[in-house]
Length: 68
Image 1 (cartoon, rainbow, N blue to C red):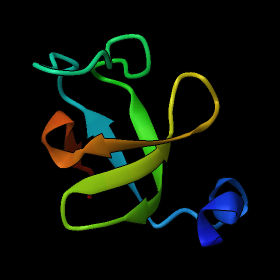
Image 2: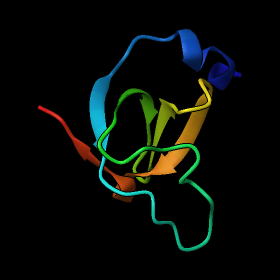
Image 3: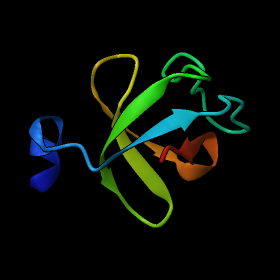
Image 4: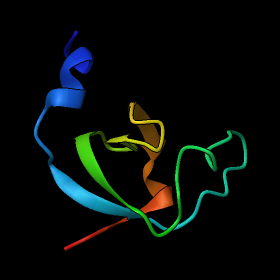
């Protein structure tokens, strides 16, 4: 199960949270708008990052913008 090692995997890229206003889920306690996060894995719809709880979390891409 590859997701067990994501916390130790290298950083793919950095992203910045632009909002934490979710319609269905509570994300405002796991994401901080304006904060930069390291991406550990990515799918078409989700980024997997180390969130504010210092654990891996999967969040929709709509909450972020990519940093260059």
